[in-house]
Image (cartoon, rainbow, N blue to C red):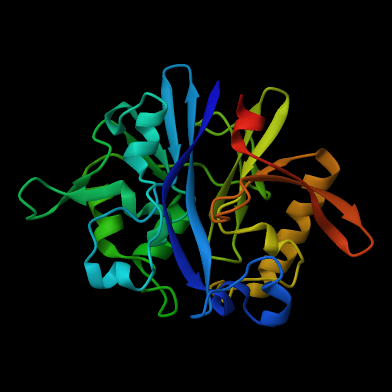
Length: 286
């Protein structure tokens, strides 16, 4: 098995929205804001090369939305999904599986693209299966009013129309062991219903793709919960459970949205689970 970080692009989000009820005087220590109160956010995806399978975890925003849409998110930097794949000698047509942690636009938008004459949509990975789960798919296709703006039908419905949609099994507990994709999955319901956190065994380590359960290293304190979460009290419990496991079992936490910290480990302290070490992907994956 080989792992590769795939940077699908950087953007900015409102710091207050990213930290909910936590005062700016606290969160700006780890996530400094610009003059518009915006903080740096990454769309750091993960490519898993395992035998004949090439699995891409999340796909970023994609490039099919309007300039007005992207104007809300202040795109910055030169990273793209295609250039990141090329860096490691791959093309999007090589991808066999696209695993979507959840169907918010910044995690799955790159899964679907315009067709050649821009009259409709098609899968951006023409040889891939696309993975979600039944409960989250229903949640996303029948969205509540709070999340409706994050579940864009043009990102979601064409996946089913393509005939390439697959669902993982659902766990009887928090963790689905040995999924069809070759890694364990932690299911979390605080941010959105049945978000999936891949837990990958790699060279004696457990690499956890944290998605929106832990967006950045600055979100480690339990009360530091995003304003986007639909069930923030449940997020508190899920973070506590997962971070205690991570500290106990020395997990390596791959941060999808942290523009400046790629992988971290955590430890127990008197204040709860806190940051231990920061690593680059190159340090851990090579």
